Image (cartoon, rainbow, N blue to C red; front, side, top):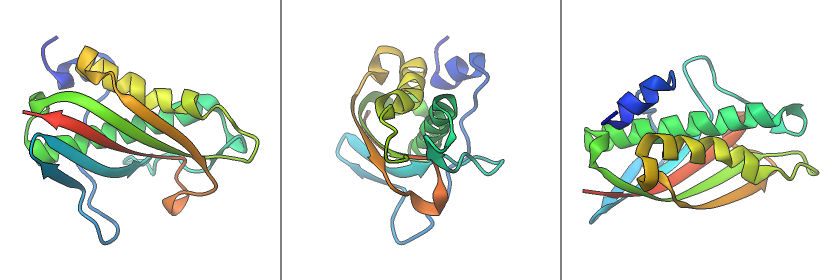
Amino acid sequence: MNTVEERLKVLGLTVPQAAAPVANYVPFVIQDKTIYISGQVSNDANGGIKGKLGVGLSLDEGQAAARLCGLSLLGQLKAALGDLSRVKRVIKLNGFVNVAPDFDAIPAVMNGCSDLMVAAFEDAGRHARSAVGVANLPLGFAVEVDGVFEIE
Protein backbone atom coordinates (compact mmCIF):
# COMPACT_ATOMS: atom_id res chain seq x y z
CA MET A 1 0.00 0.00 0.00
CA ASN A 2 1.54 3.26 -1.08
CA THR A 3 -1.04 5.99 -0.62
CA VAL A 4 -3.23 7.16 2.22
CA GLU A 5 -6.35 6.53 0.17
CA GLU A 6 -5.24 2.97 -0.70
CA ARG A 7 -4.63 2.21 2.97
CA LEU A 8 -8.06 3.58 3.87
CA LYS A 9 -9.73 1.61 1.09
CA VAL A 10 -8.47 -1.62 2.66
CA LEU A 11 -10.31 -0.55 5.83
CA GLY A 12 -13.48 0.12 3.83
CA LEU A 13 -13.12 3.89 4.24
CA THR A 14 -13.06 6.71 1.71
CA VAL A 15 -12.08 10.35 2.04
CA PRO A 16 -15.23 12.50 1.84
CA GLN A 17 -15.68 15.79 0.02
CA ALA A 18 -14.66 18.72 2.19
CA ALA A 19 -17.58 20.37 3.98
CA ALA A 20 -18.14 24.08 3.54
CA PRO A 21 -17.83 26.29 6.63
CA VAL A 22 -21.11 26.90 8.48
CA ALA A 23 -20.07 30.26 9.99
CA ASN A 24 -17.52 33.06 9.59
CA TYR A 25 -14.25 31.11 9.33
CA VAL A 26 -12.11 29.39 6.73
CA PRO A 27 -11.71 25.60 6.62
CA PHE A 28 -7.90 25.77 6.66
CA VAL A 29 -4.93 28.11 6.90
CA ILE A 30 -1.51 27.32 5.44
CA GLN A 31 1.50 28.99 7.06
CA ASP A 32 4.89 27.99 5.71
CA LYS A 33 5.04 24.17 5.96
CA THR A 34 2.08 23.86 8.35
CA ILE A 35 -1.63 23.56 7.65
CA TYR A 36 -4.21 24.20 10.34
CA ILE A 37 -7.58 22.52 9.73
CA SER A 38 -10.64 24.00 11.43
CA GLY A 39 -12.76 21.80 13.67
CA GLN A 40 -14.59 19.00 11.90
CA VAL A 41 -17.71 17.56 13.53
CA SER A 42 -18.88 13.94 13.44
CA ASN A 43 -20.94 14.46 10.30
CA ASP A 44 -21.32 12.36 7.16
CA ALA A 45 -23.71 11.95 4.24
CA ASN A 46 -26.19 10.16 6.52
CA GLY A 47 -26.38 12.96 9.09
CA GLY A 48 -23.48 11.85 11.25
CA ILE A 49 -23.40 10.98 14.91
CA LYS A 50 -25.08 13.35 17.35
CA GLY A 51 -25.67 13.21 21.06
CA LYS A 52 -23.79 12.85 24.33
CA LEU A 53 -21.39 10.15 25.37
CA GLY A 54 -22.61 8.56 28.55
CA VAL A 55 -26.25 9.44 27.78
CA GLY A 56 -27.49 7.62 24.70
CA LEU A 57 -24.13 7.10 22.98
CA SER A 58 -21.74 4.25 23.75
CA LEU A 59 -17.95 4.33 23.70
CA ASP A 60 -17.99 2.47 20.35
CA GLU A 61 -20.33 5.10 18.90
CA GLY A 62 -18.05 7.83 20.24
CA GLN A 63 -15.03 6.25 18.60
CA ALA A 64 -16.98 6.01 15.32
CA ALA A 65 -17.86 9.71 15.69
CA ALA A 66 -14.20 10.60 16.21
CA ARG A 67 -13.30 8.52 13.14
CA LEU A 68 -15.83 10.56 11.11
CA CYS A 69 -14.07 13.72 12.29
CA GLY A 70 -10.76 12.25 11.16
CA LEU A 71 -12.14 11.42 7.74
CA SER A 72 -13.43 14.99 7.45
CA LEU A 73 -9.99 16.31 8.39
CA LEU A 74 -8.58 14.22 5.53
CA GLY A 75 -11.25 15.62 3.21
CA GLN A 76 -10.21 19.17 4.10
CA LEU A 77 -6.54 18.28 3.63
CA LYS A 78 -7.26 16.83 0.20
CA ALA A 79 -9.27 19.90 -0.81
CA ALA A 80 -6.51 22.23 0.40
CA LEU A 81 -3.52 20.33 -0.96
CA GLY A 82 -4.92 18.41 -3.91
CA ASP A 83 -3.11 15.26 -2.83
CA LEU A 84 -2.77 13.67 0.60
CA SER A 85 0.79 12.61 -0.23
CA ARG A 86 1.78 16.22 0.54
CA VAL A 87 1.10 15.57 4.23
CA LYS A 88 4.46 14.89 5.84
CA ARG A 89 3.25 14.38 9.41
CA VAL A 90 0.26 14.76 11.72
CA ILE A 91 1.49 17.20 14.37
CA LYS A 92 -1.45 17.62 16.76
CA LEU A 93 -5.14 16.83 17.11
CA ASN A 94 -7.46 18.69 19.46
CA GLY A 95 -10.58 16.71 20.29
CA PHE A 96 -13.79 17.87 21.92
CA VAL A 97 -16.28 15.24 23.06
CA ASN A 98 -19.91 16.02 23.94
CA VAL A 99 -20.26 14.26 27.30
CA ALA A 100 -22.53 13.69 30.26
CA PRO A 101 -21.00 15.04 33.51
CA ASP A 102 -19.81 11.62 34.72
CA PHE A 103 -18.37 10.33 31.40
CA ASP A 104 -14.58 10.25 31.62
CA ALA A 105 -13.44 7.92 28.81
CA ILE A 106 -12.72 10.94 26.63
CA PRO A 107 -9.22 9.78 25.56
CA ALA A 108 -10.67 6.42 24.48
CA VAL A 109 -13.24 8.22 22.31
CA MET A 110 -10.47 10.26 20.65
CA ASN A 111 -8.63 7.05 19.79
CA GLY A 112 -11.16 6.70 16.95
CA CYS A 113 -9.52 9.67 15.23
CA SER A 114 -5.96 8.93 16.37
CA ASP A 115 -6.12 5.33 15.19
CA LEU A 116 -7.37 6.53 11.80
CA MET A 117 -4.43 8.93 11.43
CA VAL A 118 -1.94 6.16 12.20
CA ALA A 119 -3.71 3.82 9.76
CA ALA A 120 -3.65 6.52 7.08
CA PHE A 121 -0.15 7.95 7.56
CA GLU A 122 1.58 5.09 9.40
CA ASP A 123 4.36 6.38 11.72
CA ALA A 124 3.88 9.92 10.37
CA GLY A 125 0.34 9.73 11.76
CA ARG A 126 1.54 9.56 15.39
CA HIS A 127 0.80 12.92 16.96
CA ALA A 128 0.43 15.04 20.07
CA ARG A 129 -3.18 15.33 21.22
CA SER A 130 -5.67 16.98 23.53
CA ALA A 131 -8.97 15.35 24.48
CA VAL A 132 -11.53 17.50 26.27
CA GLY A 133 -15.04 16.77 27.46
CA VAL A 134 -17.55 19.54 26.82
CA ALA A 135 -21.20 20.20 27.71
CA ASN A 136 -22.30 20.80 24.11
CA LEU A 137 -20.99 20.97 20.54
CA PRO A 138 -22.28 22.76 17.43
CA LEU A 139 -25.54 21.34 16.06
CA GLY A 140 -25.53 18.63 18.74
CA PHE A 141 -22.72 16.57 17.20
CA ALA A 142 -20.94 14.04 19.42
CA VAL A 143 -17.33 14.94 18.59
CA GLU A 144 -15.33 17.76 17.00
CA VAL A 145 -11.64 17.58 16.08
CA ASP A 146 -9.25 20.13 14.61
CA GLY A 147 -5.74 19.37 13.46
CA VAL A 148 -2.29 20.67 12.68
CA PHE A 149 -0.25 18.97 9.95
CA GLU A 150 3.22 19.39 8.47
CA ILE A 151 3.15 19.55 4.67
CA GLU A 152 5.63 19.45 1.81
